[in-house]
Amino acid sequence: MARGGTNDPLTSLRRKELALPVAAPIAAITEAARQRHGAAVAAVLFYGSCLRLGNDEGKIVDLYVLVDGYAAAYGAGLRAALNWLLPPNVFYLEAPFEGRTVRAKYAVVSLADFAKGASGGWFHPYLWARFAQPCRLSYCRDGAVRETMADALAGSVTKCVREGLALVGERFSVRDLWVALFRQTYGTELRAEPPARAGEIYDANAAHYEKISAAVLAGQGAVQAAEAGRWRQGQRPPASGGKWLARRVLGKLLSVARLMKAAFTFQDGAHYLLWKIERHSGVTITLTPWQRRHPILASTVLFWRLYRKGAFR
Image 1 (cartoon, rainbow, N blue to C red):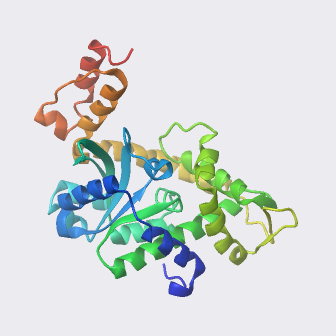
Image 2 (cartoon, rainbow, N blue to C red; image 1 turned 30 degrees about the vertical axis):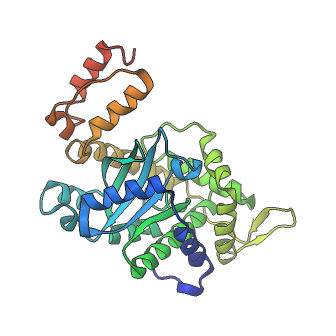
């Protein structure tokens, strides 16, 4: 998705955001992910709750590992085929850092698929809603990849603002727009987010959303209203209820398909799940090699063993 390049205000904002440094633990887990997939890795994006909170201890770092291609990342085989068919593949990873363990859940997607999906080329908001939010490049191979990333992330904002304008009234605040959008996107995935979650996501980085929205709204025909902090639509887009209903149906189906795919691709997924249970209940279980490779297929047996040990009731 071509944009205005260096002189485009939105692309410049996102380029500056990507250039911000990451903390040493994030750099350590990023390097571990990069080493796992070798020369195929073009970039690694850090985003999510650990970025919002500025702390990873006792948490799971969220990363996206962008690769040149799926065969390059895995070699020929089932993982490459499934990643191409239904991106991304998701993995769990641990790395030592100064006497403790940094943990990450990372998704693998090709640079081309990411650029298309994040910039709004996908009907489903899986990528463009995620990456309008703050993120950092914790690794980037070269300047060309960096420009591709800045361009795609600028596109994600434009897509979100366009979609959000159809969800708010004639007069609205930037917060109104993003909260309405996030509430809709949560409904397109298998996730149990409370109603207040959308507002919390916005409030955690309000300045970010104000800046990126201001760079887009005027181009969408909106003007600043007389009331401080509010905007007015020149011509409100048509209602989008049918489109979001279709996204919800598609999203649920895709979520189920990704869960089924994870039975074959989520490396160390069972280990990740058991770490979470041990952290909250103190119950530990040793996994067999097969259970580590196939966490979802092993889930029935693991559930029963954990129940008998008192991990949950």
